Amino acid sequence: MRVSITPFNGGWKMGDSLEVELDEQSTVRDLAAIVHDMKDIDPSRMSFFLDADEASAIPPDGWDCLLCEYKVTDGSVLRLEPSNSGCWLWHEIEYYKEEVLRQMVTAVKGAGEDGISMAELQKSVPLPPPMSAYLYVPLVRMHAHLFYVETDTMTREMRVWSNRGGWVPVWL
Image (spheres, rainbow, N blue to C red):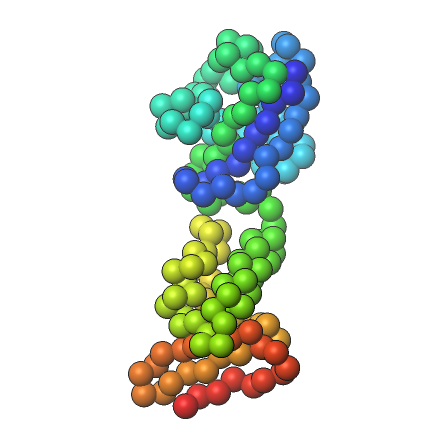
């Protein structure tokens, strides 16, 4: 049977689903071993859910049960979450960083000639949980080839534009 595993951390989807092929006699522990082999995530740090409802968690003492006992059939989708928020990532941190940068570039280009305030940029492109340690300003400043930043030294407001030709940052 084919089962899809979708990784979440709270309400945030961590990446694409993982499709796995299992036989009818597979257990939850077998499924955890496959995820471990493919993603190098320790099974003790995994929590499986039958759906988005927290009450649908498969308890660790039930991992030796057959998947069919939980009504998992061909085409089922299981939700996989870290047992403790943030204890593993589905992708390397660079994947999430590149995704945020792509969304930021789209938001800045969509703002047109007026640019976008840093506050508006932060609202339109929320950081995913694994990047909560990153701040928007350093991320924008590290990518001067993508973004042009103008800072008003009186109001401390920053405006961001697409960098269209090697412009250097400006402090007014």
